[in-house]
Length: 451
Image (cartoon, rainbow, N blue to C red; front, side, top):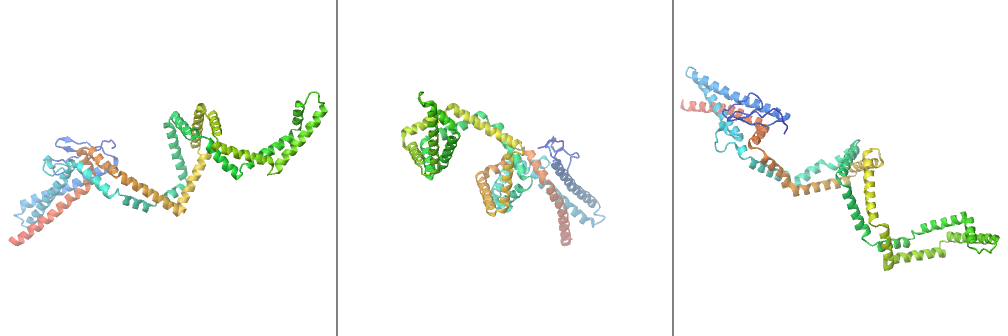
């Protein structure tokens, strides 16, 4: 509660009228009960005090009228009717004052049975209110029916697709990401990544899965594009390196062979090499290509079934991804992801932010236009809410009883009086009026019957 100088004004328990003239004090047999009020509660307290004063004013008016009528009724017999009405009004006012006061405190400080109901039974009232809310409000049918009438999916879609909706989601999402990175420990995250790499990448053998994947690739002929690329690059290299071929021939010929012979042989080798490469390049069914296909097919089979080849694949894996490499990979991965996300969320014009906003807006438009999608989202929300209500309804409703149980008994009484006390004062006013009419009616009937 907010702290301020205002207090709940209540009537003095020693009299049926409102004794405090200054707002902010509540007296109980010489004690002052202090309850802090908010601005809205101060308005309710002022209204409650006005109604109490009005009810008390009617009681005092009835008492004055009764006294005057009683004193002069022998001189003016018609005042007997006024006296009867005023007497009934006082009885009604006092009875209803007792009834209203008995809800919140002991009338005049007297511990009469069945009074001060709220302070004495606040825990039972809290439990009853908790059970009432749980039984009548926190039910799956009530929650799902209400959610269905709201059509959350379409309203959310309209908001997401409207200007500012996606930006708000991106902003809040960025705050969540920054908060998560602040809480997360880099070493812990890197350890998790390293564990996942070891479990899913290093522990399973590489040979069989790589062999199965290669077998499918080779069977479908997807490797032919790579072979064509290698052959084309080989042809380009031969065309561009005539002098290199000549030099290689010259370097490997005996010293006694004349230089011009080396040149002739080098030219011939270059021509034949070029013809060979061009033939492989032009013929899709060339023997070299078939040999490559056969070799790759055998390699795929060996990776799956040959223990020696599988062992070689494991050796290669160990060389590539040893302990230092795995730790470095985990560190680089987390560092890259963290830096990229932080830079993206800090820059509203970054590509990631723009793509995220665009995706949010598109999803919002789909929720508005796609009835099937909206229906699925509404159903999912209803099912999720129904599950939560069924599972945690007792815990949710228990907040009421637990909160009331923690309240001070007198404070609880004052809180409830502040909320409903103004309306209860009408009972006192009505009791005064009805009592007056009843007293007048009873006296009139008795006077007619008995004189």
